[in-house]
Length: 609
Image 1 (cartoon, one colour):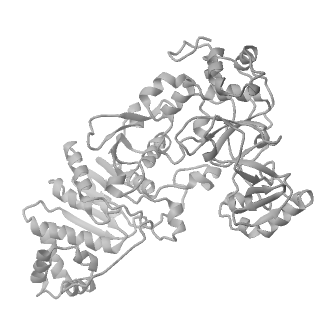
Image 2 (image 1 turned 120 degrees about the vertical axis):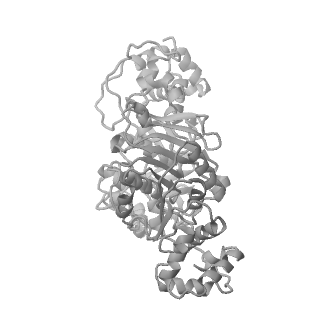
């Protein structure tokens, strides 16, 4: 409360001192303030009222610092809030009821009372008490200085949005037009968990993920996304709209989940903002806007993208085209014939969650140094070269910076043999067992000692074609063995494994072709944390692309490779590769089944073959 009053203008402080000075009961003061500002129950009790009267005396300098991360605290600048509300009014959005589930310092609520002249009721919830009071006093000050402005009924609650009962608000809506407005926290549940924060939703599989996805990376979600979905589930059955600031990744997730979750919204748009300018945040963000209610048209599963500054200039449309999720609907139409099912199974690299122990620098011979600076002399039978995302910057990879200990050849395999096969390595792992015990992921629960994840026979294929999941570039690298041992990739990479280099080269050439590159540009979201995922890569119909490529195109693609690598590459082998694959039992999940080129009407991008 101290910081709230400290933000008031001196004239406002003097006005409040004069009006409240002779009042001794908080309910009488509330009657006065609701008449001035429309704020219901300005003081929750007598203690609040007396504390305010005391603070209206000469104030102390106070500092109420909070951990910005705990609240996902990116407070909306007044100028941006005004711009958004002005845009909404220009779109003829005129709400009777406005709800802001996390109102912070109140920028949106102030803009709402200024710009929505017909609004009848405003509801807001905020967990951080200093912001709760600052918003109350800011609204009060606004109405003190703007006596003739429309005064809606304003209900502000100091509460956790995940525990607040929105039932009382629902009862007041009826047939009124509602607007869900605001800027929910830009923070994930795992980040809040690491801070031991209390403003977390109850544990639930709210996106209906399958068992494995729910306990691995896909189980992590944005608090903002959770709050937006809460509001959609609660209020989309009424007439109205939603306008929420959020990260672009959240908007993508919302549109992606539309068919499965059956959200009651349509007419979605993402109005891009400059998050660096407004929030000093290095993230892509937009105003997510949608209308409530059903729309059976296919366009209900699409989202238009434009700038908030020029909302009528549509730059792009993303969303669902039949059963395919695309990032650019216009360019996708040219390349959709290649969007199918990969004949190879893409694999993620090795995951161990213990990099200081499992990842090593080579010194000499059998001597290594780990991430803690410890040096050891151990057997190298289970030590392999390691490639990370940052290493996949060249067309061909034949070197590595790091080594990794590979304790298993398949998930769940016993690691007891390490003690006898590599006793020095076993002692090293045993001495550092406490680091493995500290791994938090449940995928290691009830697994053998020193278990890893993302490993199988495919990991030991000598030749690999790989891509970084993290970087914006969509180029694929050919990864070759070093000193007769295959290179491993970490879990930020995706790869295909091959027993012979010729097949690897053909697939590498196909994936780097203009056909695949332009398809990827139309189905990936480069502002995502991980633009390239297994789900995306499994959509690449390598067979169909190969059918549309001539041998001349392949020769042009492989021209940069070392001549010794392509001595066995010729047109006859290309024809065999392109048209008839051997039906090999999928031991490691990476061999293609029998399939042939489909006879299709040539695409404008198709080759002559």
